[in-house]
Length: 391
Ligand code: FAD
Ligand code: PHB
Image (cartoon, rainbow, N blue to C red; front, top):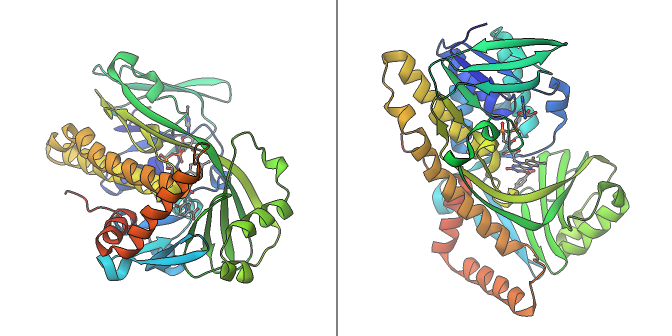
């Protein structure tokens, strides 16, 4: 088999890249190690920046998103039992959209099927070859047979644990990492959300987040030690812990019910530099991870893919490789800004093992400053709703 671009990974990054390229007449194959059902069962991000919505529109997959997505004009932040609203619309004239990553993935899968573009699910032992030479190839096994795909370019969209970044010679890759000493325990339940907008809470017992997928489906998170297992958290214990961290009004309005999904996610900041190695490009979680506090993971994956797709389209359209040559530099500028914001939100809102009485007073003072300073709020709103693209 020969294609122009071989894409490893059918998460949102790989599927979106495939869709943008297919619409420009560039042929691709997507190789994914899991089944479609497994990919769709992973409950992850839920909040889309306007730039992400625009890119999904460009890909022709935003119809259901516009019908079912919930447009939010602000968020609330709670400290010491008092909530303060950050008014995105008033501060920066922008909004964000609540629409789950699983829905984005499903829309992209349907669009790919409609175009009859090839995807190989349950592709085993995927490996990448000669990406720094002239004839890049991707090999995989399926049903006991080894297959090889020859291509012009390889897109590594295979997430943090994927094979593409790990195939790059160690001497050519710099990585920067911070692992946080806690995780997020998340619960999805078919109950109405506690509030119309998201509530981020800094409580002495730890961070909590009230978010949603629709007006009948809620998503809640509580910070938990990394030593905890999901089995340690029967629903009752989760709801009790969440209640103990919420303000009185949220507590009174919280509707609980059986969980339909429960998982623990570790928190990490990670950046690999550069993002290009000859004819191999890394995009999304394969290249970087942010802690979810800033809601940036999925949005950053989409912004990488947008730069990569535009670079490839220019290359195949008129032989212009300047955009591809600038891919790493342009992505990394946005990536580090998102890393900074996600790290800042995480530091501000969580209880760290060394958060003593002084540390907690400092978090309180930083939040008090935020709540009285329109400039500080504007900075939060700008970063949360997404920085503009430089194209
Ligand atoms: P992924 O979604 O990870 O997709 C990569 C794909 O590659 C997967 O389908 C994987 O199966 C496949 N793959 C991996 N290795 C191979 C291989 N060797 N061969 C072939 N295929 C391979 N972000 C937020 O904004 N908010 C959140 O609440 C949030 N929660 C998260 C919870 C968890 C547990 C995780 C892991 C991430 C979370 N994120 C969250 C981040 C967000 O979901 C990611 O940034 C987003 O999924 C990135 O998309 P991606 O396509 O780059 O990577
Ligand atoms: C979510 O809806 O799952 C979500 C929203 C905002 C975040 C993290 C997760 O910061």
